[in-house]
Length: 62
Image: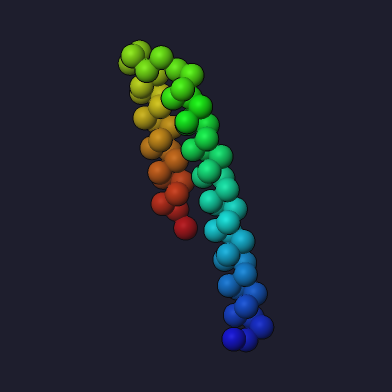
């Protein structure tokens, strides 16, 4: 592999690691929210759904 290819590959790996770390943090927040919230209230269910949808959208971006 050429030097530039290695730099690009390493940059991509770093970017993906950062994205995974951020996603992991968001999933931890969701897990905590699920444990803390009383999910019988519709308002909280909607908020959780919006949160999950925004996380899915973030993860689908390149």
